[in-house]
Length: 120
Ligand SMILES: NC(=O)c1ccc[n+]([C@@H]2O[C@H](COP(=O)([O-])OP(=O)(O)OC[C@H]3O[C@@H](n4cnc5c(N)ncnc54)[C@H](OP(=O)(O)O)[C@@H]3O)[C@@H](O)[C@H]2O)c1
Image 1 (cartoon, rainbow, N blue to C red):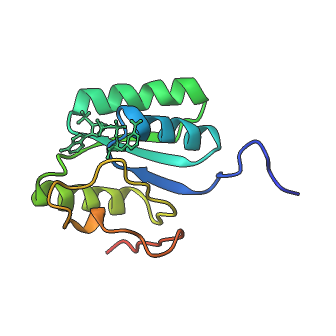
Image 2 (image 1 turned 180 degrees about the horizontal axis):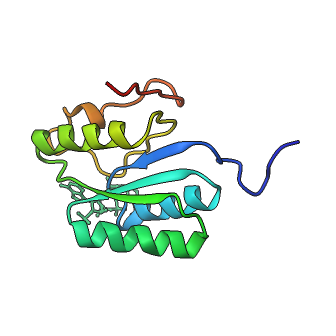
């Protein structure tokens, strides 16, 4: 039977630039559909506050805040390592905010919707 209330249950989603705007709206929507959601922004307190707000709003406890300034390649790599450590698989990666240079590994388009990462 198709689950119409939490169709994204069991999926892990990382949404860059998701403390406001389209990214935040996407995070709320996907958390409401049951995804495990990682949100990102440049400021620790804001990222944690927005993650808590989304957990409260949606009733989904699996929403975490991560911090990185995506204009910095060093921070992009640190974020990627933190996400790989936190989640064994990554299913969906919408990008609200890419790196300023557009060259970061985390900002590259995912060729397929289902993308797996392997912890080192
Ligand atoms: N809003 C719309 O209606 C709309 C419509 C069509 C297209 N778009 C496009 O969708 C994208 C998102 O637009 P938006 O208006 O929703 O939001 P935005 O103002 O472009 O982005 C806001 C988000 O990006 C984060 N952010 C900004 N600079 C960052 C950086 N250097 N490193 C890491 N995170 C950063 C912010 O987090 P912190 O401030 O917490 O760091 C916040 O979560 C843009 O490319 C926009 O052109 C938007």
